Length: 456
Image (cartoon, rainbow, N blue to C red; front, side):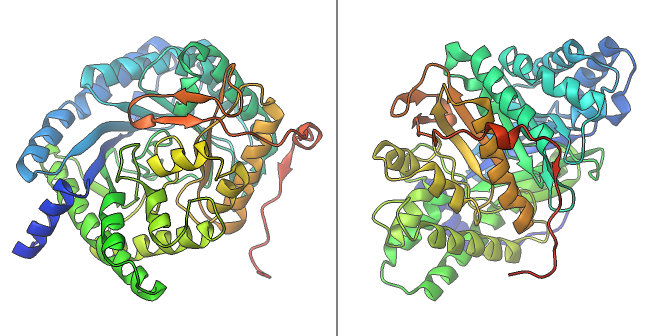
């Protein structure tokens, strides 16, 4: 284990960040490879998956509880990510994939963890039979389990966008919403559609254990919007250069705390340390909002003109500061702007100050994409697919990860309030453009990869 030296001043600052500014370790995630579980018999595959996950991660919750108590730093979530299931269940039909999801859910329940991710497929250039069966199983899998999260990567900068998969995912989101209609269509909160997905992301719902990863690995996701917000509030009149330097210093301190926890967990679990994801991830709690950071820069309300520039500054400064603090930064790293999970975003949506179009523009410079946005329940599947295509195009052209996690709330209308509970928060349903995108979406095929020279 690499030795980390901390000064007395740094320790006192960290204590203050925890007590006053809501610093926490958002998640410790064990990534587990399932390639050695492969079997032609689905029942045997399920048994092997359950046994491996519950064995490798058996000490996860106890270890993080002990570390949290010893260091005085809250560790909010314990999670597991696994190899994309479409890669290890080649002969399963849709019903078989649902049984695999149920096995993952039982494993998560046994471990006492929050979520298990990896019910996933990568289809940026095309779909195999296994990919199609997994996607067909997603609505039932998410409706019939509590802790299983799913993701589908439909595009990349090198491959372009698989528009057949984009169209399919619009229909899949609609079906998932319908099957969980009695719970505010909550199934959609566990489903992400990616472009340029990363393989070491510890944040749900998009976490999976990539093919380039070792047999098992510990990844850590830190969070600290409150730390950055308090620093900005104490220095309200600095110019943007000084503002960026201040945020970098805060990100450095946050990341140091994350690396300490991650390496300690790695040593005690006997599992290699992977990465620190240094994202600023908000919660619905007051004082833990990314939106409020942007407003502290001088915006009357997030969503107004200037919001994209403010978010670009924040995202870049967080990355620069975090990269100085750790040699192993990965995942999504940046600032998240989930609407229902951010107290400032929730208020902006309730007041009508932020629109779907402005959110899309902001995702061009932030960490992920359109995240936890409630939409009218009658939104057509083709419109959902077009929203996915727009967001994926931003990721494809700009060589960055983008994602869509939207929730067409069954029976819900624009302006209605929907409650998801816990960290998922609540949100006012945002209207979508009423004009049809059906002819565009139904063309099918693949949007070619962009030329990466002749930039402008």
